[in-house]
Amino acid sequence: MAEPETNDATPFLPDRHSLKALREAAADCRGCHLWRPATQTVFGDGRRASRVMLVGEQPGDREDRAGRPFVGPAGRELDRGLEAAGIDRAETYVTNVVKHFKFEERGRRRIHQTPKRFEIDACRPWLDAELEVVKPEALVLLGATAAKALLGSSFRVTKHRGELLDCELAPLVAATIHPSAILRAPDDEARQGEREAFATDLRVVARALCPV
Ligand code: SF4
Image 1 (spheres, rainbow, N blue to C red):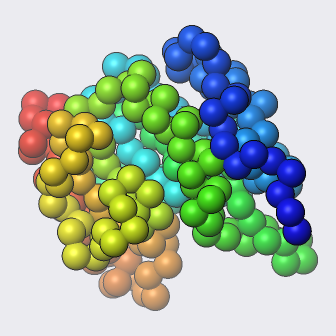
Image 2: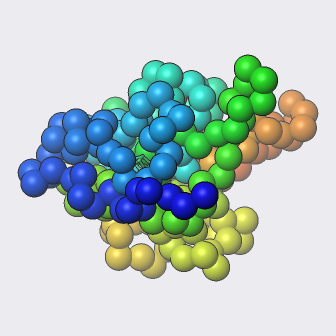
């Protein structure tokens, strides 16, 4: 089916780039088709002075209803990892490369669907504006979708997780898994291993930032 939208959020950006102005404008974004079935735009959350920006893929079911990123089970894993790494959550700004929840309805359940490249590209102006305003000292990309969106489609999180990467987006850039991957671990032992590895990746950033 042809997309009536322009697949570009640029026309919806406000003239003034403050987080408040951006968040308010993003609430009315129609830059791609994803706004239609979703409840609301889920813009980034955190203070402008945050030293660390964490970027995930897209809001999940819980986030779509709450209107805030990383408030569901994956968000709790993120909080846990940050605490284990010694990064103050209050020093972080959390957001996603795509600001609307993309899902497929199966009965009463809404199942996450990975956003396509054109949807990520359409939403990119919001993330660029967030980066411009927050200017984080460290940028942490959570999961393959976010990492590929910002570092190129050939980037492999499995190969380069926990490394400090040479990238102009921020003084410190690193990639790790999305915390939802911890939840998908097959058993408690695997889950604990994923948790520890996630915290280890975040510790690399914490040490480089020190003192946080
Ligand atoms: S996903 Fe992004 S570009 Fe698409 S409508 Fe939502 S905010 Fe706009």
